[in-house]
Length: 264
Image (cartoon, rainbow, N blue to C red; front, side, top):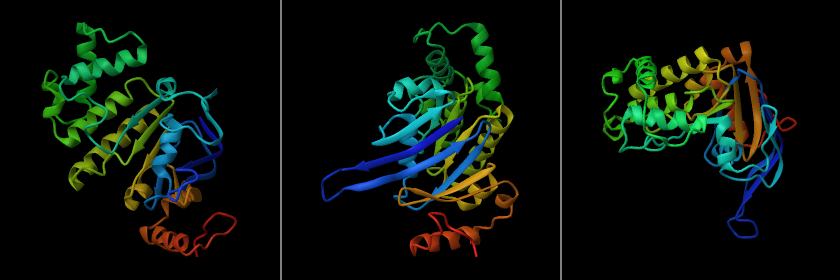
């Protein structure tokens, strides 16, 4: 589903602020995988998502989404393959537009039908039914402006918009980090339901180690632009937060084994 080959990215080349953000990333996500990504500040997590989505172009390497080589394609050319939800609830939706208009905008972008605002009665029913699945009572507020919603409600709507038509890959960039703990837990439950029910291949960045362990079938840790640890399946289910804390400590001390960290 996603294949990364030797991805490199350096910012501010030739200056005192030069920073190698990604250092030879080789990584594959299979169809239906839900991968959680952890790592300290500056590890390269968000840069990785920005490289995949085309916000930044890689300095070297190759990116394949599905069967399509997107290495040299711009962000808007990759948009049809991807869904993305950002950390900031203000991104991803139009505050001055209603819930149903935001849903229609997402649908028309995917279907390449242009931004024609004649929403049919059939579409209104479809959007209302989808919003009802969130369990937030927003199906009774379809004509309300999105800007009037809480951060959690807005992120939930953004999730629906990003997955309205199943994307090849869903990118979640710390999408609950700006929410209070109770709201974040609700949005994560909604995320898990949408991803699981629709079998959407997903890459999710989080700083919450419990969430990283609990959600998804694979977990990777990044450090200084590299993937230094990966775990999946039964081994992932047995992980404890203390295990990840140990790995973070080893990463800080440079204790690598063939560019991969080992527990114990």
